[in-house]
Length: 205
Image (cartoon, rainbow, N blue to C red; front, top):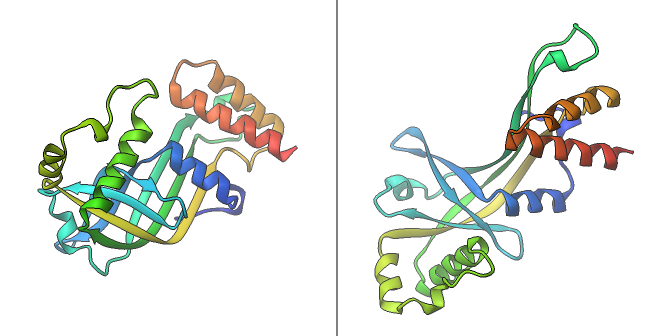
């Protein structure tokens, strides 16, 4: 990923927190000699060196991923930045966003206990605290039967690239103008980008 120095995220805690909060990723590999992508949730393990996930078994992307360098992209909020928000007409439109790219090698997981553990972690992460749903309460034969329809995997992380393009290359006063305009909209991503920009300015100070 192209990352100018202004936009590079180097703080590991920031990176891992971003992955935790934006876990629905795009998983890229070569399949039958062409680029192929699947959209799926990925879970970071406790040691932070492996991602866990699973394909639908009917999705043949899993069949030829051995020995490939895989790319998983975690996309955060993004929004259009209008030059009309600046204090000068010598400007052009741009786009602010946050994205994390993770590369690594994939290993298919066949051990049922490991598969169940990764599925249980996924359910526990996304079910609300007051939800009645829990895999431990589901009949084990049903879970085993459903598990036959997926292919679980783990991706051993070999490289992390992290980028937050939040107008850091502009003067602070201009950044404040952008934040003001973003906060005056009702679009969810605009508000999220504004929040990240404010946090970045606070840390900058």
